Image (cartoon, rainbow, N blue to C red; front, top):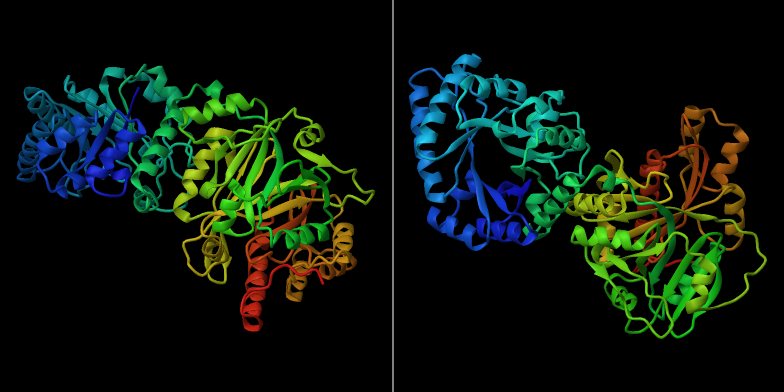
Length: 624
């Protein structure tokens, strides 16, 4: 199948859209009528521009409110069609795109509609054109592709065929098996769109929330399986209306679109998820001046300095299976990152089975690969470019980490202190709202992560949208947060951070109460939670008074599901940039305590405002 993209998917002017479509690797495009009407040049210039870029104009679309009309509207519709064909001839495209009528004046008679399409098909045939007919989810009569196919079948004209659109099919919850019975030569075009599952009208859902394959929740794999049964080998074209795409650079969006079609057309066996072993290490970019303060913060969390790099200003801090790297090396990637973002997470290393296979997938999906400079005998760790220029290192899951560290670090023997924190539970990233779908696609296509439903979390300054991306065994968990409201905690992070990145790291323990007591004795300051929260917990969950009292004393938040319980607490924010969450999962609880996010955000906002009233700048970490 050949890959195409509708110009409506992209922002910008027509020339910029076509250049982006060509650069991404598409072979053709659907010319949306508004792009034609707003173009200052001639149709011949568009035709030449497409030829120069190596692109086929798949169709000029749409042609609305045509079939099933009474006179004199019917005659006028055919006059409009003739003028549209004149434009098609100038453009050099051959597919006349008709979407089902929405006019209340139209008839629902399939026979009458078929007669109109037959006549249109005959006029098109005489000019070397074809007519494609599409069921529209909000059409007055033809909103089911099976009815559209019946109309095409009754028209019985060689120049009249069917256009299939996944959004119109799935938004109506239509059964798919009938597609396999349609002759492939009668399918003139297949339009592809994904979407989140939302409770709203079909028209606004379509106009604002469509997405590329892999970014939504529609069962497109099932559609492709049935389509393959027809042996269809024509155009597979993205037609996506999305508010975010209208605000992002067209080249980035077009490249995501190309990746999504590669993903959609992949052999189902090749879509088996990448086997991950969780997070191998998190690397902090920290200045020489701030390194002691960050080290003090980690010490209060119970981490020990286990090693110093043999040749660089890089140290290794460990606790349980958690590895943190502090990088202050002058002239390094980390220091360049620090100059832009401050003390921050500049890289995350993920354990995967088959690094080379993951790198090959990255090349297939045109994801940038990074190899940093190394000294003699040092590890060369491949990485993918992550959010806002950060790095995502890839390490073989079978790697024994102690021997791994011994190559680059002078290791000290661990001190015999109790291990409170065991492993990284999840990482939470904040990103611009316009980038969320792009990163959802990245994590799904490259690492095989699956995404959850989108949640909206109240913030005193607006709403935050949150979505989880997880490996099938949950060894790797990411939470993606964004907000279009300028006053939210997420928006403040983007402003302070000068871009997107890791806002918090959740560390797992098997005894949250004992852990927090030890860490408070170390001088760790926890985020204070209001007393009213615990009164509400008592009413909602009927927890034991002694448990509630202990939770309140340690600022522990709580959630439960039918599968288990979740206890979690937060540190105060370090340098007004990131913070640590400490979690204990009991039973088979799989969530993230999202119900408590508004409480946490309100507490952080209150603390931030108090700091502004007492200090000229917000406080950094304090251990006193």
